Structure formats: structure tokens, C-alpha cells
Amino acid sequence: MEAVISPLPDDIAALKALLAATIQRADEAEARLADAAARESATQAMIAHLKLQIARLRREQCGASAERSRRLLEQMELQLEDLEADAGTDDLVAEVAAARATGVASFERKRPARQPFPSHLPRERLVIAAPCACPACGGTRLSKLGEDVTETLEVIPRAWKVIQTVRERVACRDCEKISQPPAPFHVVPCGWAGPSFLAMLLFEKYGQHQPLNRQAERFAREGVPLSVSTLADQVGAAALALTPLYRRIEAHVLAAERLHGDDTTVPVMAKVKTDVGRLWVYVRDDRPFAGAGPPAALFHYSRDRRGEHPQAHLATWSGILQADAYGGYGALYREGRLPGPVREAGCFAHARRKFFELADVAGAARKKSRGEHAGMIYPIALEAVRRLDTLFDIEREINGKPPADRLAARQQLSAPVMNELHAWLTAQHATLSRNHDLAKAINYMLRRWGAFTRFLDDGRVCLSNNAAERALRCIPLGRKAWLFCGSDRGGQRAAILYTLIQTARLSNVDPQAWLADVLARIADHPAARLDELLPWNWSPSNQVAKAA
Image (cartoon, rainbow, N blue to C red; front, side, top):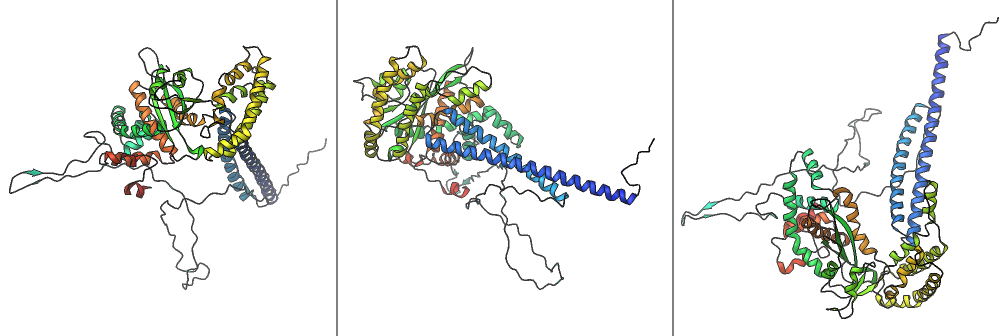
């Protein structure tokens, strides 16, 4: 029997050399593997980035097909965030592995170009002094050639402070009377909260959907324990102080010739179970027809959805109302109404959505892949969506133009499309059962054809009610955080604060900075000049300007 000869040498030096070569090959293999992983991560991130760009361009070109497309974009953005983070991690791993292996070059990922930091941010210079002697020869005859500046973005954590306002008292030696300057104004009588703190409290609760209990927990972790009841007291007083501005915004909105209207549910605490209240919104947005009036949103709260609520909200208003087919608006459209009838304008986005749900090919494919029941895809629904998209394409070209230009383009381009659409819908309806989903979608338009053709006679009318839906989007987002309103008065207070915050956003104004400045100035501001504090007229005071 032959002895097995070991392939390893018996010499220690040779073994050390073999081990070193093996370690080097392992390092190189590990570096190549890390390099491949980094390339794969970078490729996946780039693919996700390009898909997101394509989806955005398609949405801009074809229009907002439904809320589903918006949610799909948000999901793609979240996916891209994770892929970019993975690519950054794998890039660093590959760099470390390549440093150990001399025979493998490190993979360099093409990083997205970063925009320069805003110029208004303060700069703090940290100078690393040059050496006093030459590191090469030790000479001391050095001359400065220039400098390289590396900018790093940093944030200062929230700092709390207590402002002590000292009011000196003096006594008159002649009349023996004591005098003292008046106490400073507080939003809450004998209050303790400053305007910046109140603005942060309001904006976090109604603009960022953070309930007071979560804010109180955060404050306690920062070393400032405040009870929820104490914070709620400040919120109520601040809302009361801001009510005059709410009334000015209400007057501005109701002075419009055309409004967008919509409503959404809001849970309200009750004795036995949570009731379902309503938040109504009326949006004035004259920008699509180059109007001079600044945009604004007006919110109202009600405990139910009875038609008497919109009738009370718009009791003194007449004009064009763009809304859905809610029956509660019917009394507003009645002939002989005082001060004048409200003319209804249909929302093509609502009408298109009913057809799109029956023509959602991609959605049906996803359901089928998950093993769920997928509804039928109807060619009639696909054709209806295509015809409605033609109208939206025309509208995108004339958006922002004066009413006369919009009306002329609609008479030339949109009117023939509407005539063909009406004839086609009528013909298709005759072939369907009255209980068919397609028949219901067609009836939605045919029964309100006068409202849907209103835009052909008035250049101020928009094709959709998306302005109101965008303004209401904050409510569904907040419901997941604050769950319900505590009472009817809480709902009314929410309507006031939502009006202020959403109007500031429509005016491209930072809501928190605006609220802080207004709360600091509103007590001393003349009532006759209160309009100066409205978001579209607002100019910050010196203190706010310095802080910005």
C-alpha cells in the first residue's frame, strides 16, 4: 500500500509563504465579491431611479390617472431610498475590501450630484492651521498659496430658554405714587408660552400630525416636562387669538367667483362609540385662469353630513361650485335661490376614476399574481378613459392662461370631443344592463351633462376638483396619528388651524414662521390693518427675518 504524500511542504518558511499567498487570494476574492455586490447595488439603485423618473414623466404627460398612481410613486420613492442606502453601504464595504487586496481596484459608484448648500445658511469657519515648518526639509520660509474649503451641513439641536421680562417699579417722591410699565402680552392671559413655542405646538399638531401626548413625551426627554392639559390650554387660547385671521380668510374665500368644495370623514369621541364627523373645505384658486386673487383654503366642521351644512357655509355666496355629485349641494343649485343660484361644474377626475377602476389592467394583473379575484377589463371603459384623457391633454396646454384664451381653445378643441363623447356614451349605455357597473359610470356623466359641459361656456372653470382634494389630503394623513377629535369644539378648532396652515402652504409661506410672527404681533396690530398679517400679504418682522 502506497503512502499518501501531502501536497503541503514541510519547510516552515515555505508554509508561511503559501499561507500568505492563500490569504492574499482570499482577500482578492473577497474584494471581487464586494466589488460585484457594490456594482449590483448601484445598478439596482440606478434602475429604480430611472423607473421613478419614467413614472413621473408619464404622470406629467398623461395626467394624474388616480390616487393609485400617486401612491405608486410614493412607494417607488421609498424603495429608491432603501436601494440608495444599500448601494452606499456596499460601496464602503468594497472600498475596505479593496484596500486589503492590492490586486483589485476599488469600485467607484457614480454618486448623485449634490446641490450647493443654501447661501442664506450661516457659515462657521474652522481653520486647520498650516504647519510652521516644511515636513520635507524642515525649512521655515513658508508662503501661503491658498486654501481648500470643505463644507459639512450640521444642525443645532432644539435649545430651550426662559426669557425673564423685568418690569421695574418706581415711586415718586413728590406725589408718593408708584408706577410700573405694563406687563408684556401673552396669547393666554397671564400665560407663560412664547409665540415661537406656540407656533411650534400648533404646527406640530395640525401641520405635522403629532398629537400633544407625543409632543409632551418629546419635551420631557429634552428636560422640559409639560403636561398634556397644560399644552392643550395653550392650543385653545392660541386658536382663539387667531380666529380674526380665520374670519378674514373666510371672507376672502367667499369673495371668489368660483370655488372647489369637498369633504372627508373625521372620527369624533362620543360616549358609547366614536362618531363620524365631517370636515368640509372650500378652496379658492384662481391661478389656473391667471386670476389675481391669492389662493386660500377654508375649513368647516360638522357632526354629520347633512346638506344643511354646505348650505349654511355658502348661504351668502353665489358663483360656480366645482364639487362631486353629493346630493347635499342640490339646494344650492336651485333656481330662485338668494342671493343667487350656484352653478354646478362637474369633476372629470371623479368621472374618469369610475371608468378607470373598470379598466385597470395593471391592477388586475397584480391581483391575479397574488391569487386574488381580478375583475374584468372592459374595452368600453378603456375607450372612455382614452377619450377623457384627450380632454385633460387639452387642458394642460391652456393651464394658467386668461379665461378668454381658455374659452377659445375649448370651443375649438374640447367641444367636438365632448359632442363625440356624449354620442358614444349614449350609444354604449343602450347596450348595457342598467345595473351594470359600466352603466352606472356612464349614468354618472349623462345625468349631469350640463355640469360637465360648464367648462365649455366659462374659461374660469377647471376640469377637475383636485384643488379641494389636495387641500383635504392632510386629514387622512393625520387620522392615522391622532385617531379622532376629542369633541365637537375640538373639530371646530381643527378647522380654524387647518385653514391657517393650508392657506399658508398655498401661499408658499412657512406656516410655523408665519404663525410665530403673527402670534407675536397680533395683539398690538391695528384691527383696520389686520389684512397685512394674512399669508399672501405677510412680511416678517425683523426678528423673524434675522432668524430665517
